[in-house]
Image (cartoon, rainbow, N blue to C red; front, top):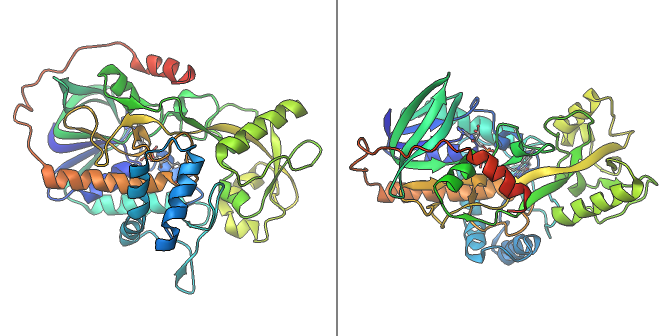
Length: 412
Ligand SMILES: Cc1cc2nc3c(=O)[nH]c(=O)nc-3n(C[C@H](O)[C@H](O)[C@H](O)COP(=O)(O)OP(=O)(O)OC[C@H]3O[C@@H](n4cnc5c(N)ncnc54)[C@H](O)[C@@H]3O)c2cc1C
């Protein structure tokens, strides 16, 4: 196949990028179904700068949570373009919670004020459903589901598309530009809130072709995944549950940490307390939440009820689990990587926004802001690759996923 632009991944980054491309043919491939992305699983919400007075506070909260390892220039871009990112989502049909025509804002750990827009406790699903509907309307976007990128087509540090596998058949999709939007690395972990099929495929490509990576030692552990004995994806008890007043309790039913500290601090406190208590979980007590739990957190409430837990009456067992990759393929403010004609956006990319630890609800925002910028760059600078059809891909069958796994487990 041949196209102008090939997009790998149908999370929020891949979809926003595709929707923002003008007058070009796009092929968007995705490993499973369009809906099967971590973006769809997002519960809490998406940050936005409240007003100009919030600019410095939002930047400071992001930098503080990131231990000041963030790239300030990227943080400023994200904060300054946050309103327009939200306006794009609203224009695609996303309906954030409102009261009397005014948007409602919630709070999560590390935020000095309420600046998170949300849709119940299913913000990701609401955003993704609107974007998927929009993608289906676009005649210039061809979607191929159940299609896995297995390699890049590379010559002389230039990317000419990808090799894919669909229904056990291998074929090439040649393109003047390729964008990786393959998400994080959760699938490489035993306990993760991520989908197992989201397992660092884009990063493995970067290792293979020596595309510049950054901050690969910065992996976020979320403090409150629902504790279950069985292996598999861990269900998240969103941070906004603590934002609305839930408490963490130890074996003695005593609080042991400020629940609204950034995630790395709360996770460390959880692990320490679990060791002290000699058990595999601690409790989250949702009873102090002043709102009706069933109405504010319908998905979480429903899941817990299925597991035989009524959060109005019972404590909920929670455990830290891998959640997010702050590092990734190093990109500039337009999503350009160190390889010519290859871009990256979303969790697979490292814009430097998050530093050593991501502030809650900054990930969807980062994906939208920087995917839009990447598309704008292509819209303004598109040049067809002249030797697209003749380039021969490098033959290398080494398993770079194994190498990636080792690298991450060894701390980047
Ligand atoms: C449970 C949960 C809750 C979260 N809550 C929030 C929240 O409230 N707010 C917030 O800001 N962030 C939240 N996050 C983080 C956020 O959802 C993600 O970081 C973000 O959505 C990543 O988007 P993405 O487009 O980069 O990747 P993803 O949404 O992960 O999508 C990756 C895509 O790439 C595809 N793919 C991967 N490999 C291949 C391949 N080889 N070939 C073809 N396709 C491939 C996948 O199938 C998928 O479509 C949450 C994450 C989880 C897991």
